[in-house]
Image 1 (cartoon, rainbow, N blue to C red):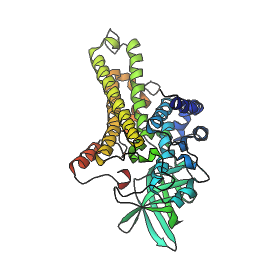
Image 2 (cartoon, rainbow, N blue to C red):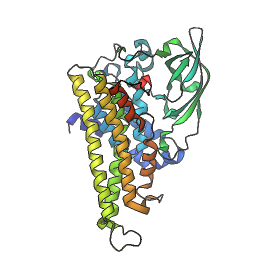
Image 3 (spheres, rainbow, N blue to C red):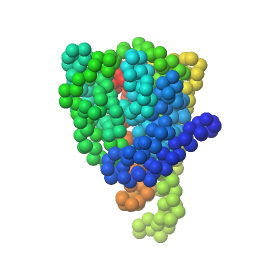
Length: 382
C-alpha cells in the first residue's frame, strides 16, 4: 500500500478505537456519540474531499475508500459519517465561489448534512427564499451546522443550504439497522435564507467548477462519492465471511453429528460468497482507480465511464448484500441471536441494500444511460 495512503488510514486509528468502544451507545441512542464525531473531525474526516486551497486533504478516491472501510470495520454507522461529512464538500465543486467561501473558508471542518429524498418548497421573499417542508433520511443531522436539500420553486428544482439551528430534527430514526447514523427527518417551517445559499441545477454536462475546485480530484465524476459509503457494505460482507469461518470450526448444526465445516451446503454458500465478495470489491476499487488515473491524465469522464463507476458502486452494495444472505443461509440459527456474531451484520446490510443511491433499481439506471432511455434518478447524481 502507498505510504501516504497508509499514513492517512493510521491518522484515523484513534477515531476507530473510540467508534468501536461507543458503537453500542450509538446503536442504543440512534445517533453517533459526540466523542466519536469529535475524534473523526479531529482526524480530518470532513476534509477528505475538500480542496487543499480551503484547508482540505483532497485525497484520491481509493484512499477515501480505504479510510471508510477501515472505520467500518470498527463501526459501520461511524463510517457512514464519512459520507455525511464529504458529500456536500464534493458537490460544492460547481457552486458559486462566494457560497463555498462563506461555508468553508474559515471552517473546513464544518458538517453539512444532506438528503435528496423529498424536496422542500421555496417561495421568493425579498432577496432570498422562505423554505418549508420535511425531508427524510438526513444522516448525521445531530452533528451538522447546515442542511443541504433540494427545493421546488414552481416547476424548478434547486439546491438550498439551511442552518440546522433554524430547522427541527424529528427523532424518528427507529430502523432495523444502521441505527447509529441518526438518519432522522428534518423539518423546515418558514426558514428564510438569502439567495446566495441557493444553487440552481445546471444542465447535465454544463456544470463548471469554481476557482476553489481546480485540483485533479475534481476532474473525477461526482460518483466518486461512492468511496464515502459503499465500502461500509464491503466491510460488512468481509466481517460476515470471517464470522462464518469461525462458526464452521466450532458449530455442530442441530440434529447433525458433524461440524458445520463438513456440511456441503455451507461449503458451497461460503465459496460462492467469497468469490462474489472478492469480485465485487475488485471491480469497485478498479473503477475508482480508473477514474483517478483519467483525472491525473487531465481527461474528463464520458457518460459511459460515469455509468461504469455507478455500476461498480451499485454492484458492490448489492453483491455485499448477497454475500451476507449466503452467509446467513450457511450459518443457520446462529444468525438469529442478538448476542451472536451475525445478527447486527444482517440488520445493517438489509438496511443498506435499500439505500436510494445504490439499490437494485440503479442497475436499471446504468442501462438507461447506455441505451439512451429516460433516466430515473435525480440530476444531483448524474
